Length: 217
Image (cartoon, rainbow, N blue to C red; front, side, top):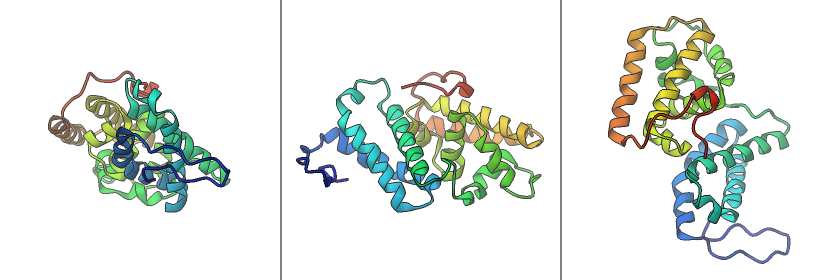
């Protein structure tokens, strides 16, 4: 996406140049959005197409988006809508296609630090069953590898909200997988999140019940 939205073969005149704040938002968030969409769509080109459609919608609504409490939170919901639409249009379920994302050391350290699981398939299935907000935090934080502060920024929620949601999600995953909840491993993971939160800054109180989806836009 450039300063103008891509031209469509519909005979409609090109749109006006995009506002500077929208262009800055696009530049900041597009790489993360593409990485997310690529996990679910299985290809870079189709992921970029879905992300560009999401940004087209955001551009058309930009004035209203800026009046929201959390434009980033709304933009994330728009991205996910378009990712789901793209998956269904290709006849696939909107689930992670690249299972290699569940082989990361960070994920296994957070969920299975003493190596009780013989393979990652169980983790993959358990993450799919998480509530939406917990799922998003786990995938961004431990599969893709964003920091706690970066995850909060992408989702448009608070840093304490990400830390709290990650703790709930890790506990839920261990229960689903029948793993022992090692207090030391939990303390290490929580301490790492707390250090990142202190560096990135805590921008608000802990969000609501993570299982209910966290803070709304």
